[in-house]
Length: 169
Image 1 (cartoon, one colour):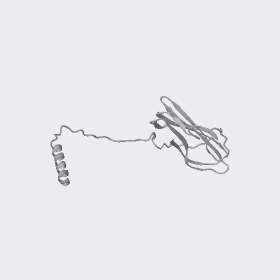
Image 2 (tube, helix red, strand yellow):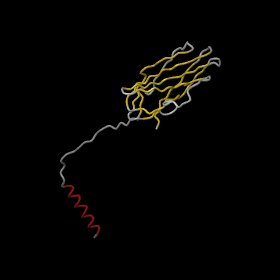
Image 3 (cartoon, helix red, strand yellow):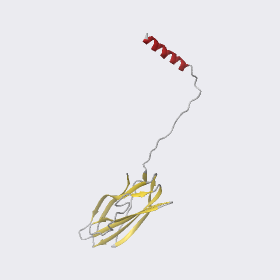
Image 4 (cartoon, helix red, strand yellow):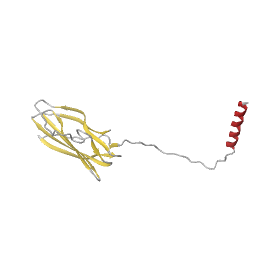
């Protein structure tokens, strides 16, 4: 008896639904594209220092990339990989300034003693964006880099290094 009642209830429900008339359809389409909070375009920028022939100096590279900050974040710049071959009588100190220039705000990340194979004296405080995370506001920023050097001695050296910009969570 219970089985007959259950089957009857299912048939009545199916007939009631079968009496419904379609009045319209809403098609839903779209694309989901979730980007990271911080993005650099292009993701890799190549810089060629060329031949350095003076014992001290600097070179600036403007607008090498765009940094997109979708929500206020924290970033830090650090050396990724490095390969520098220099004779023992050649002392090299490389420092840099990473500039982020936006429509409403600009930032400078000072990077003293970025590379050194000799004694390099720098300020003993944490530098935001280099030693500690830098709070950066939402926006679009032009990325520029200034590299400076001090060299003592004589000889030839080969420099290959990467500077990474990291989002800190």
